[in-house]
Image (cartoon, rainbow, N blue to C red; front, top):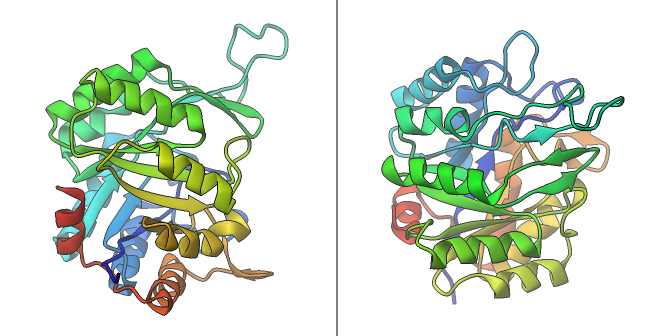
Length: 290
Protein backbone atom coordinates (compact mmCIF):
# COMPACT_ATOMS: atom_id res chain seq x y z
CA UNK A 1 0.00 0.00 0.00
CA UNK A 2 1.28 3.45 -0.90
CA UNK A 3 2.29 5.64 2.04
CA UNK A 4 4.17 8.93 2.52
CA UNK A 5 7.87 8.21 3.05
CA UNK A 6 9.93 10.70 5.05
CA UNK A 7 13.38 11.68 3.80
CA UNK A 8 15.90 12.91 6.36
CA UNK A 9 19.07 14.63 5.14
CA UNK A 10 22.17 14.38 7.37
CA UNK A 11 23.86 17.54 6.22
CA UNK A 12 27.48 17.48 7.41
CA UNK A 13 28.31 15.11 10.28
CA UNK A 14 31.49 15.30 12.32
CA UNK A 15 33.91 13.06 10.42
CA UNK A 16 37.09 14.13 8.64
CA UNK A 17 35.30 14.53 5.32
CA UNK A 18 35.79 18.17 4.36
CA UNK A 19 39.06 17.45 2.56
CA UNK A 20 37.45 14.60 0.63
CA UNK A 21 34.52 16.48 -0.88
CA UNK A 22 34.36 20.30 -1.14
CA UNK A 23 30.56 20.17 -1.02
CA UNK A 24 30.63 19.26 2.70
CA UNK A 25 29.40 22.42 4.49
CA UNK A 26 31.40 23.85 7.40
CA UNK A 27 30.24 27.31 8.48
CA UNK A 28 26.78 28.00 9.90
CA UNK A 29 25.85 29.82 6.70
CA UNK A 30 27.03 26.90 4.54
CA UNK A 31 25.29 24.29 6.72
CA UNK A 32 22.04 26.27 6.76
CA UNK A 33 22.12 26.83 2.99
CA UNK A 34 22.79 23.16 2.33
CA UNK A 35 19.96 22.17 4.70
CA UNK A 36 17.54 24.58 3.01
CA UNK A 37 18.46 23.28 -0.44
CA UNK A 38 17.98 19.70 0.77
CA UNK A 39 14.54 20.64 2.10
CA UNK A 40 13.63 22.20 -1.22
CA UNK A 41 14.69 18.95 -2.92
CA UNK A 42 12.34 16.86 -0.76
CA UNK A 43 13.85 16.33 2.69
CA UNK A 44 11.24 16.81 5.42
CA UNK A 45 13.93 16.54 8.14
CA UNK A 46 17.42 18.01 8.27
CA UNK A 47 19.91 16.45 10.71
CA UNK A 48 22.44 19.02 11.88
CA UNK A 49 25.96 18.91 13.31
CA UNK A 50 28.08 22.04 13.53
CA UNK A 51 31.80 22.41 12.83
CA UNK A 52 34.47 24.83 13.97
CA UNK A 53 34.83 27.12 10.93
CA UNK A 54 38.59 27.38 11.45
CA UNK A 55 39.49 23.73 12.03
CA UNK A 56 36.45 22.11 10.29
CA UNK A 57 36.27 19.69 13.25
CA UNK A 58 33.11 18.82 15.17
CA UNK A 59 32.03 21.44 17.69
CA UNK A 60 29.74 21.78 20.70
CA UNK A 61 29.67 25.58 20.44
CA UNK A 62 26.18 26.77 21.35
CA UNK A 63 26.56 29.94 19.30
CA UNK A 64 27.27 27.93 16.16
CA UNK A 65 24.11 25.90 16.72
CA UNK A 66 22.08 29.01 17.45
CA UNK A 67 23.29 30.73 14.28
CA UNK A 68 22.69 27.68 12.09
CA UNK A 69 19.18 27.04 13.38
CA UNK A 70 18.33 30.74 13.15
CA UNK A 71 19.39 30.90 9.51
CA UNK A 72 17.30 27.86 8.63
CA UNK A 73 14.22 29.09 10.47
CA UNK A 74 14.50 32.58 8.96
CA UNK A 75 13.86 31.06 5.53
CA UNK A 76 11.94 27.84 6.26
CA UNK A 77 9.72 27.49 9.30
CA UNK A 78 8.29 24.13 8.24
CA UNK A 79 11.25 21.76 7.82
CA UNK A 80 11.80 19.49 10.83
CA UNK A 81 15.10 20.25 12.57
CA UNK A 82 17.03 17.38 14.13
CA UNK A 83 20.15 18.36 16.11
CA UNK A 84 22.82 15.85 17.05
CA UNK A 85 23.93 14.99 20.58
CA UNK A 86 26.60 12.60 19.30
CA UNK A 87 29.48 15.07 19.53
CA UNK A 88 31.53 14.54 22.66
CA UNK A 89 31.48 10.73 22.74
CA UNK A 90 34.83 9.70 21.23
CA UNK A 91 37.58 8.06 23.29
CA UNK A 92 41.06 7.09 22.14
CA UNK A 93 43.29 5.35 24.72
CA UNK A 94 46.63 7.04 25.31
CA UNK A 95 49.61 5.21 23.81
CA UNK A 96 51.58 5.17 27.07
CA UNK A 97 48.68 4.90 29.50
CA UNK A 98 45.37 3.61 28.12
CA UNK A 99 43.57 5.09 31.14
CA UNK A 100 44.40 8.55 29.83
CA UNK A 101 42.80 10.06 26.71
CA UNK A 102 44.91 10.17 23.58
CA UNK A 103 44.70 12.47 20.54
CA UNK A 104 41.25 12.40 19.02
CA UNK A 105 39.39 12.03 22.30
CA UNK A 106 36.38 14.34 22.54
CA UNK A 107 34.58 13.09 25.66
CA UNK A 108 32.18 15.64 27.11
CA UNK A 109 29.63 15.55 29.91
CA UNK A 110 25.97 14.70 29.24
CA UNK A 111 25.13 18.27 30.26
CA UNK A 112 27.43 19.76 27.62
CA UNK A 113 26.28 17.31 24.94
CA UNK A 114 22.64 18.38 25.45
CA UNK A 115 23.08 22.08 26.25
CA UNK A 116 22.01 23.18 22.76
CA UNK A 117 18.94 20.92 22.98
CA UNK A 118 17.88 22.52 26.27
CA UNK A 119 18.34 26.04 24.91
CA UNK A 120 17.20 25.76 21.29
CA UNK A 121 14.50 23.07 21.67
CA UNK A 122 14.63 21.58 18.16
CA UNK A 123 11.87 19.29 16.93
CA UNK A 124 14.09 16.18 17.22
CA UNK A 125 17.57 15.35 18.50
CA UNK A 126 19.62 12.24 17.99
CA UNK A 127 20.50 9.99 20.94
CA UNK A 128 23.11 7.30 20.23
CA UNK A 129 22.01 4.22 22.11
CA UNK A 130 25.23 2.55 23.15
CA UNK A 131 28.98 2.16 23.15
CA UNK A 132 30.87 0.53 20.30
CA UNK A 133 34.14 0.41 18.42
CA UNK A 134 33.78 2.96 15.61
CA UNK A 135 36.71 2.77 13.23
CA UNK A 136 39.82 3.12 15.39
CA UNK A 137 38.04 4.93 18.23
CA UNK A 138 35.52 4.04 20.91
CA UNK A 139 32.13 5.70 20.61
CA UNK A 140 31.17 5.91 24.28
CA UNK A 141 27.56 6.23 25.43
CA UNK A 142 27.08 4.56 28.80
CA UNK A 143 23.61 3.74 30.16
CA UNK A 144 24.07 6.30 32.95
CA UNK A 145 25.01 9.08 30.56
CA UNK A 146 22.15 8.17 28.23
CA UNK A 147 19.68 8.34 31.11
CA UNK A 148 20.94 11.83 32.02
CA UNK A 149 20.70 12.99 28.40
CA UNK A 150 17.24 11.47 27.97
CA UNK A 151 16.02 13.40 31.02
CA UNK A 152 17.21 16.73 29.59
CA UNK A 153 15.67 15.89 26.19
CA UNK A 154 12.32 14.98 27.76
CA UNK A 155 12.27 18.15 29.87
CA UNK A 156 12.90 20.20 26.71
CA UNK A 157 9.92 18.39 25.09
CA UNK A 158 12.11 17.26 22.19
CA UNK A 159 11.62 13.87 20.52
CA UNK A 160 14.79 11.74 20.69
CA UNK A 161 15.79 9.90 17.54
CA UNK A 162 17.29 6.69 18.94
CA UNK A 163 20.28 5.83 16.78
CA UNK A 164 21.05 2.11 16.87
CA UNK A 165 24.20 0.74 15.25
CA UNK A 166 23.89 -2.86 16.44
CA UNK A 167 21.32 -5.16 18.00
CA UNK A 168 22.44 -4.51 21.57
CA UNK A 169 21.61 -0.84 21.14
CA UNK A 170 17.99 -1.76 20.36
CA UNK A 171 17.88 -3.90 23.51
CA UNK A 172 19.18 -1.01 25.64
CA UNK A 173 16.69 1.42 24.09
CA UNK A 174 13.84 -1.03 24.72
CA UNK A 175 14.91 -1.41 28.35
CA UNK A 176 15.02 2.37 28.81
CA UNK A 177 11.55 2.64 27.28
CA UNK A 178 10.23 -0.02 29.66
CA UNK A 179 11.79 1.85 32.61
CA UNK A 180 10.14 5.11 31.52
CA UNK A 181 13.47 6.80 30.78
CA UNK A 182 12.48 7.29 27.14
CA UNK A 183 8.97 8.66 26.69
CA UNK A 184 6.73 8.42 23.57
CA UNK A 185 6.74 8.93 20.69
CA UNK A 186 9.47 6.40 19.95
CA UNK A 187 11.59 7.08 16.88
CA UNK A 188 14.52 4.90 15.76
CA UNK A 189 17.31 5.37 13.22
CA UNK A 190 18.90 2.08 12.11
CA UNK A 191 22.50 2.90 11.19
CA UNK A 192 24.18 0.32 8.94
CA UNK A 193 27.63 -0.20 7.52
CA UNK A 194 29.53 1.81 10.14
CA UNK A 195 32.73 0.01 11.22
CA UNK A 196 32.19 -1.99 13.48
CA UNK A 197 28.45 -2.11 13.74
CA UNK A 198 25.78 -3.99 11.83
CA UNK A 199 26.55 -4.44 8.12
CA UNK A 200 24.50 -2.69 5.45
CA UNK A 201 22.57 -5.76 4.32
CA UNK A 202 18.94 -6.72 3.90
CA UNK A 203 19.28 -9.35 6.61
CA UNK A 204 20.75 -6.90 9.14
CA UNK A 205 18.08 -4.28 8.52
CA UNK A 206 15.24 -6.78 8.74
CA UNK A 207 16.69 -8.29 11.94
CA UNK A 208 16.94 -4.92 13.67
CA UNK A 209 13.56 -3.76 12.39
CA UNK A 210 11.89 -6.81 13.92
CA UNK A 211 13.52 -6.02 17.29
CA UNK A 212 11.93 -2.56 17.52
CA UNK A 213 9.15 -1.92 20.05
CA UNK A 214 5.62 -2.12 18.73
CA UNK A 215 4.40 1.16 17.29
CA UNK A 216 7.83 2.74 16.85
CA UNK A 217 8.53 4.74 13.72
CA UNK A 218 11.88 4.05 12.10
CA UNK A 219 14.39 5.24 9.54
CA UNK A 220 17.43 3.45 8.18
CA UNK A 221 20.55 4.36 6.26
CA UNK A 222 23.72 2.78 4.92
CA UNK A 223 27.01 4.59 4.59
CA UNK A 224 29.08 5.11 1.45
CA UNK A 225 28.18 2.92 -1.51
CA UNK A 226 25.39 1.34 0.54
CA UNK A 227 23.42 4.58 0.84
CA UNK A 228 21.04 4.20 -2.09
CA UNK A 229 20.50 0.42 -1.87
CA UNK A 230 19.51 0.91 1.77
CA UNK A 231 17.07 3.67 0.74
CA UNK A 232 15.21 1.13 -1.38
CA UNK A 233 15.48 -1.58 1.26
CA UNK A 234 14.12 0.62 4.04
CA UNK A 235 11.11 1.64 1.96
CA UNK A 236 10.35 -1.99 1.07
CA UNK A 237 10.51 -3.01 4.75
CA UNK A 238 8.17 -0.20 5.83
CA UNK A 239 10.62 2.40 7.09
CA UNK A 240 11.71 5.90 6.21
CA UNK A 241 15.07 6.95 4.77
CA UNK A 242 18.14 9.05 5.45
CA UNK A 243 20.71 10.31 2.97
CA UNK A 244 23.28 13.10 3.06
CA UNK A 245 26.94 14.05 3.03
CA UNK A 246 27.37 12.93 6.64
CA UNK A 247 27.04 9.33 5.49
CA UNK A 248 28.12 9.33 1.85
CA UNK A 249 30.25 11.65 -0.28
CA UNK A 250 29.40 10.16 -3.69
CA UNK A 251 26.50 10.34 -6.10
CA UNK A 252 27.84 7.38 -8.08
CA UNK A 253 31.02 5.37 -8.56
CA UNK A 254 33.90 7.86 -8.71
CA UNK A 255 31.45 10.80 -8.85
CA UNK A 256 31.52 13.13 -5.86
CA UNK A 257 28.11 14.39 -4.79
CA UNK A 258 27.87 18.09 -5.68
CA UNK A 259 25.46 18.80 -2.81
CA UNK A 260 23.15 17.36 -0.21
CA UNK A 261 20.28 18.33 -2.47
CA UNK A 262 21.62 16.03 -5.20
CA UNK A 263 21.60 13.09 -2.78
CA UNK A 264 18.03 13.92 -1.71
CA UNK A 265 16.93 14.16 -5.34
CA UNK A 266 18.30 10.65 -5.98
CA UNK A 267 16.45 9.34 -2.92
CA UNK A 268 13.23 10.98 -4.13
CA UNK A 269 13.50 9.17 -7.45
CA UNK A 270 14.07 5.82 -5.72
CA UNK A 271 11.14 6.24 -3.33
CA UNK A 272 8.77 7.36 -6.06
CA UNK A 273 9.91 4.58 -8.38
CA UNK A 274 8.89 2.07 -5.71
CA UNK A 275 5.46 3.69 -5.68
CA UNK A 276 5.38 5.96 -2.64
CA UNK A 277 4.92 9.73 -2.32
CA UNK A 278 7.44 11.91 -0.48
CA UNK A 279 6.23 13.12 2.91
CA UNK A 280 5.97 16.85 3.47
CA UNK A 281 7.24 18.33 6.75
CA UNK A 282 3.63 18.51 7.98
CA UNK A 283 3.08 14.85 7.17
CA UNK A 284 6.39 13.94 8.83
CA UNK A 285 5.30 15.70 12.02
CA UNK A 286 2.02 13.76 11.99
CA UNK A 287 3.67 10.39 11.27
CA UNK A 288 6.29 10.80 14.00
CA UNK A 289 3.94 12.42 16.51
CA UNK A 290 5.71 15.72 16.97
